[in-house]
Length: 160
Image (cartoon, rainbow, N blue to C red):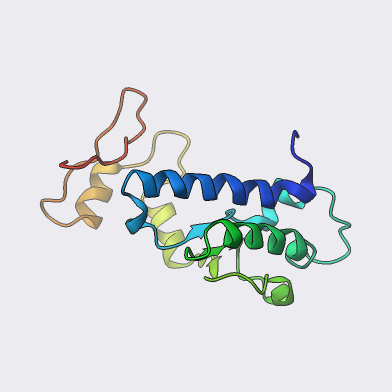
């Protein structure tokens, strides 16, 4: 990769601080509650080069604290955090002290799994029944999703 593992969180911080400045210039910053430096930090390229003797959450702490500090330097009034896949119960000591918001993906299967299996959300054979899911889960009169030519739903625009 072009950016050394030790430098990735600070480079992300600079990029996100720049993005925030753009949002501010465009009058959009008021809708940003906080900035997430990286999603599910212990499961991606941020872990490259770590010794592997401790859980990744613990070994990432110093790198992430440097990235969070950089973002705080650039945008001191904007809350910033990192995000964890699952709740790292075995590694809470690795959560950076300079986060402003705690964000975890607990992946509580049970009810979620019932939805995934029941509606075929991960079906590879076309078994996802969108009409049934919409009928069961959406409020009456909810707008239908808009789709582009690629099948990906485009972002909502002002006025519709």
